[in-house]
Length: 439
Image 1 (spheres, one colour):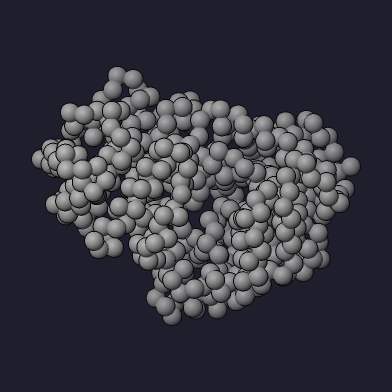
Image 2 (image 1 turned 135 degrees about the vertical axis):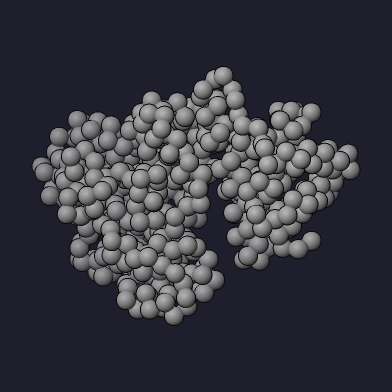
């Protein structure tokens, strides 16, 4: 089996595990080389982005309905049909043959024959594939755009059908990638020269200094530039919260729920690694990786502490960043699995946790200090509604304008917050506000 075929087989294993356990675990891909691992991630994310539509096609061309199929067969077919429809570089015969071989290997020759029959049925009509035509409008849209029905209903009510369609289409596109030059290890101008010399195409962002939109992050990984600390892979919208906190050299800063640590490193860069950043997270494993990363980025003022923020007591700091756990509905292009792992109950749970985290964070801010609250969610309950409820409970905090810190295009609520959308801003969906403790 060549690398591509192996990547297919491993992708099927990961997708089966996701169906059965609701956890996306790429560790099985570690047996592949770097190229194979990249192909696996691409396959898995693309199939999850189009899962409902692929399942519709399987039902259309199979006598055995998808609800009656084992997860193994479902995912072999999803991957094979995805290859046939969306991968111009893969000939139909190759997609069919390799899917059949995987099916035979995992489920036996009869299932291999069934896989062959379903995929050849689809191949005959590939120029005129059926379109979803359910009477239930929500189900129709959810199937067409491969989003869960509860999210389709929410976004249609909030944005209207046309804009909801645009948002879901953006979530199904290949993500936009950014890298950020780390000035603790190199200088932005030197990093630009480095990219130019290696013929890496890039577009420098006008929104934040040191950010570059790139076609792929692979060149930065394969050249070891991340390990050497020259740059970070970080969406530009994820950089807004640290820039809004505006940490200065010599200050005491807390980064709560800090892992994987890209915001901590950015703040260290903004502070010239002078002062102190305490990165707090509940996961000791992720904190270990954060500490290693800080060393490679020369972010020498970062300390780590494992703790549950809701139960944490610390001395008051100049600035606190709370990038809160959330539903992640703003990052469904990069994290396609989240659309299938979230529901209204998980939204409610996130809102309750965020409330506790904010209350705890408020006790760590000194008078005159700043508190930045941010999420990668698009849901109002997690964002400005959460903030207004917090301010009702904590009259010693006041909302501050983000004007002067961030571009006008992303400002919301009269300039007292920011919100990005994948279909409007060519970046992930992020929200944030700046609050000041006034008494």
